[in-house]
Length: 224
Image (cartoon, rainbow, N blue to C red; front, side):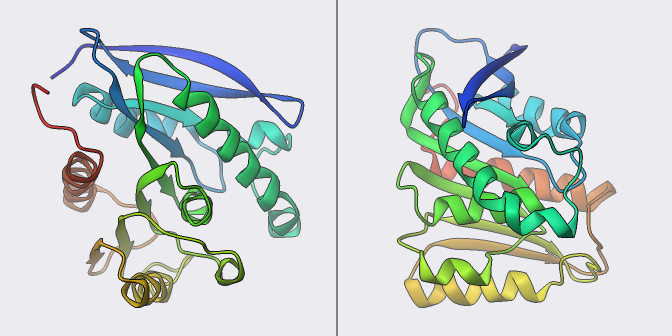
């Protein structure tokens, strides 16, 4: 377990100040793998604090991205979702550029973690950004429109509730089909009876799977 520090920084994207909540493990001089985390359509940066702190305590530098800063959005409504989606993707691209320049980060070990809308953004970005080495997506999916732009995909962990009324579980199976056609490594867990958002034992299990997956694909081992 690493002691962690919390702070907030900002970088520019599209002329706007974009905030990053930083959860950083104490460094002994070695660079850490990084994870950029994205919330869902209702915002909720605070809800990302617990998973971010957990990953940081295990040796990952975690950055929670306030991507709504780019569009002045409080929450993502259907009428602005498609208009803003490309701007949020560019903001995530710029966030990767900012994070990879940090002295405590190994730029060859950057992963993304997204919830719901954030998962759609992480998967879309990973489809065009070779700097992304792994993705953990909670109850999201890959936009059908991305098939026109998809260049590559890194290993992906799919976590979805079977009874999700917001993002149907079919989105997870569609992503699985894309990954299998392309021969991309993936892991997948569909939780019986779970809806949109996890709690209790489902949340605990998803957290353990997330940690194991990121350790596997970002090349982190305890004591390294």
